[in-house]
Length: 118
Length: 119
Image (cartoon, rainbow over all chains, first blue to last red; front, side, top):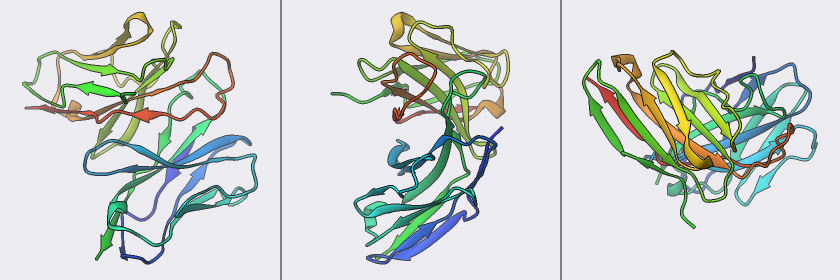
């Protein structure tokens, strides 16, 4: 079974600064997907960014980018020019490519609470 | 169009009672997922429906939990004889995944969840 570890329960950053959230995972598969989701106090999970393991290029979405190190099984999220609206819980998630046997859902880390200081 | 909706938003029940939680996926989405989010266990996958196929129930924590999906759309998660450890936020997600063994890059869109409190 796959596991996802987020070692930072909480991170704090000044508005307009850059912050990096860490994520490591364990899998025996060679191809899979990785995600970062954001959960504000409204509880609704919002996809921030997605990475396909077979792609070497790191995914980027506006101020959000990832550092995907496949050999190290590391998938960190960098948020540039932090804004007050970025304050939320951030979850790293893994999903296998193939269906069945309990593999259909996302496997989540425990989350990192990001605080933005004005 | 509308996103994934869930009802009720909050539910308080007494230990031993049955509860039903409802999920309305995004129109046209064939895949539907239920997750549980609790302080102790984090986010756990519970069950997955794909179209009219038999669901993948491998994540359900006990036989007190069941789910159905009528007409390939609305889903209901039922918890029988609730226990205090069932207290959690129950999240539903849907995706436009088409049938087939390989997932592709479909994204799961989440609803706002139902907060269940068992007294």
